[in-house]
Length: 419
Image (cartoon, rainbow, N blue to C red; front, side, top):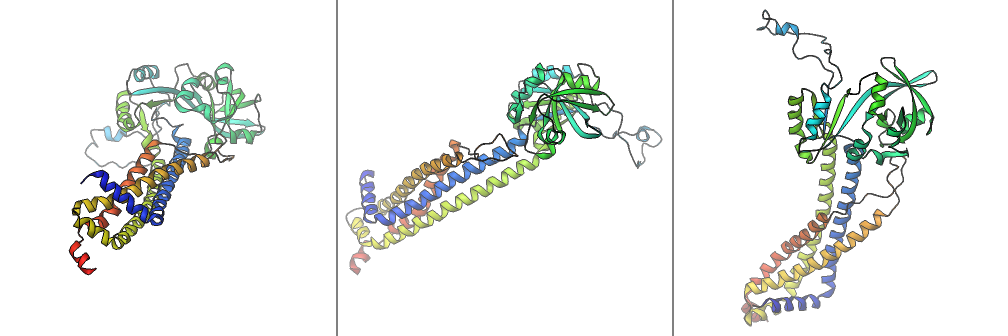
């Protein structure tokens, strides 16, 4: 039977029950609209929350960890080699925080085609001298350009310019919490003392805010050269090397590779921030579960409407079969009705979902913890729109399949005889 004829009959039946058809299409439209809105908002929120940490976290961190020696002298003795030696109160071995041969490591990483970029770092435990009070703090000596390009350092500045760390000698960018505790502003000079007793005045050229109080109260940034000067170390002194990869999924394997190759400790992003990935996955599961439930409910509405249409159109179905339409043709008519409702409702749902998401993205979102965020986060990923329309078609097809199969099995002789 010609497809055009089947579609024409489907359209006629739809128009005959226009009110029910509109209600079914509205159900699909509402489901798709909520699916697009919820997924766009939740994934945008996930991206914002994870970005607070993940944007500032390297894919691989190379460093020297302070830890006890795995091989104690008693284990090396031939006399006690076959014994079970129990040692208490093991102290960390004398291992410098400096990464040995750091410049050669940086050159090796630069030549690795899997590496997007590297950012050397000097981390120093310090005290901020505020009158008679000393505040604990951590100074991160960074390569300013690399840190901004790879880890979006400039995005978290609320005062000042990150370039001033390079152009202004002995300068520092404080965390907002630390700046508020010391009551300092741009241009002020603070005194910093290291654990070794070295003291250096630093000029405040900026204030940053990550949005996590434990970091904003302690962390501060200066240039690598200033941090080396503060510690009294040479220009080759580095305590950390942060690596960003072209493919994040390679991080766990490459961390182990670099650990053995460079004889340093290495930790990958997935291991360091496993709790954030778990939280993101759970929020995504909840979002998809709620959205899919809405579409399934809309599918039941279509199923009920088609069932009622079959009972009301028994005469029409009998006439169609008596005039030469096969059961397959009748099934095609009712499946076409279901798909027309699904496609129409799905397209409208995508449109309304986009409009609603756009409206939400314009709503002001002001919070002191996230000064860089001005509106609610929305993720306009085309993938979600494709998933929405495909799922709408699948849901409505399944909802129409069983009533269509029932209609295809109608015996026209019994219907006509009953009349």
